[in-house]
Amino acid sequence: MLHSKDLKKAYENDKINTYQQVEIDNTLTRLCDYMGKCERIKNTIFPTTYSMYMRFTLCLFIILLPFSLTDLLGWLQIPLVTTIGAAFFLIEKMAIHLQDPFENKPTDTPMTTICGTIEKNLMQMINEFRDEFEIQHKKTEAEVIGVCTEKNPYFVL
Image (cartoon, rainbow, N blue to C red; front, side):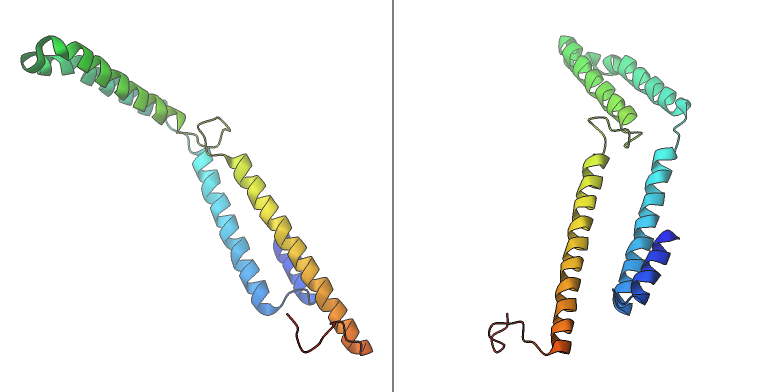
């Protein structure tokens, strides 16, 4: 709501044209949609039974695995079952840690870094727009007065 008021005010003050207004409005709409999606991901609660069933199935698999390997490997099944069990338990532990990707843990999505980058990019865009607006404003003042601002008006880069 506040974004649309600011956007309308900028349009009325001739700081942006119609095309820019439409594009900024579309960008703000997409940004709000993405924020809503991230909030839904963050607020999704995984039931504890999900983790319990996963752990139960994993333990059952690890307990029954040696019985299937007895005839094939003999004594080599002990290190193999230990390795397979450790790998599966590590995968299960990772799945539990990745259930909530926005908690600022080392394994999470680096939201602070991403937000800092977005903020830096927006500030650069604002400064570029401000500089462009000031240059354009000075040119219009110079045209009104009739003064040439370029050193050589035939070779303007």
